[in-house]
Amino acid sequence: MTAIEFGNTLINHSTFLEGVAIKFTKDRDEASDLKQDTFLKALANKDKYRPGTNIKGWLYTIMRNTFINQYRKRKSRNTFSDESENQYFINQKEAHPDSRTDGLITRNHIDSVIKKTDPHYVDSFLMHFEGYKYEEISNILEIPLGTVKSRIFLARKKLMNQLKDYRN
Image (tube, rainbow, N blue to C red; front, side, top):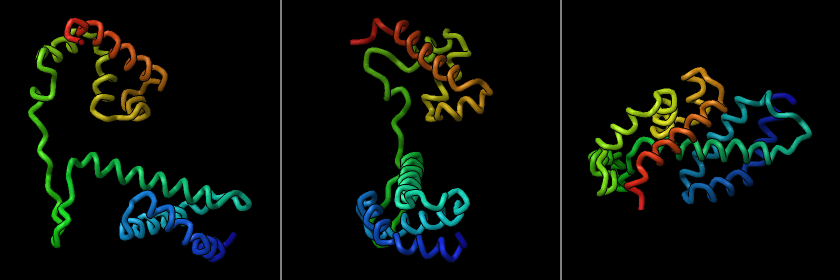
């Protein structure tokens, strides 16, 4: 399939993508941007599409993944949008770390319990707690994915056991 044929195929599915984008974003302008991003990614990955397969499904997957990635980026920025005429982005202040823990236990106590736990388990656990995905932790620490999952599970189990007196 030539680039022109592929582009025409994308254009033929524009209405379908617009409807899906509106369902995802609930906003016409954002939907238009999402549709355009989807087209750009589809064109950039044209070689990955296999003619004769379900192009709507392929485009839907690209759009869904793009939407999810954009949502995660917005969420991780910890900002919110001012919908006034100037549309400023305002940083959202986080609570002081000590105030985010339960009343019966302090953050310092949790930190001391974590420090007593085997560092192999704690490294993976803390990276996961900070928002890293299993695959990212595996790549950074250069350990198998299964090891990452088991270390996080075991760290969580050990920490819950050590902090059981504070649980309801």
